[in-house]
Length: 254
Image (cartoon, rainbow, N blue to C red; front, side, top):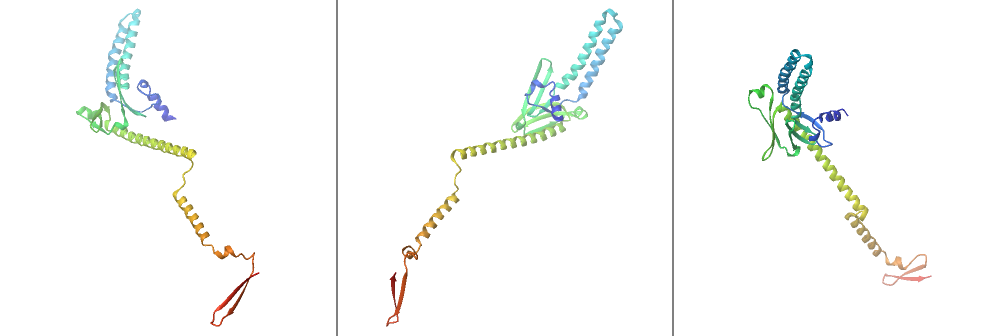
């Protein structure tokens, strides 16, 4: 619940660049020290002007120095707002790069995770090492997809994006495999309900063998068992020895 609340708060100011169910996991920007320097400069400049107007102008011109003070706050806040909205967003679906130099001039670039093959980190000049910023180049085999400049702590940002990309792709593949298994299972169940369960070859062969064995047993049944039945007739056997040493047998039916 807490994570979802943080993700929703990070959507502040970027709703028009995101899908309805898309959340911001991380946001990467230029070093805040650059914006802070301009904020301090404008605060001193316009704050000094509004203070001078308040001190030297008569009381009836109070509206003038009040307007100068409001303008000073606007100039300071505009620097912070420009630093805030010009960011590289790692969302729950992809990477979104916001370029918003002026209020009525803005554009965004979306880059899907499965299109990225490599992230290159580039630092040029002494200032990039002193202030710990650099350029991230998102590449695919065959060319560069997008480059974002002056990102704070670029090496750490590249590791975070690569780690989340691996987790995203693993979860995506697992979801697709589960959906495919469910689809195949439903297809098999529908086929069984419509056409019945198929017989196995082993069962058919076993049935054929048992039928053949029964036929053989019937064929091997003795002939005398079929003709002579103990409960229907009685037979007396008389045997005599002839002159040559053989036997004579007389069967008398009773």
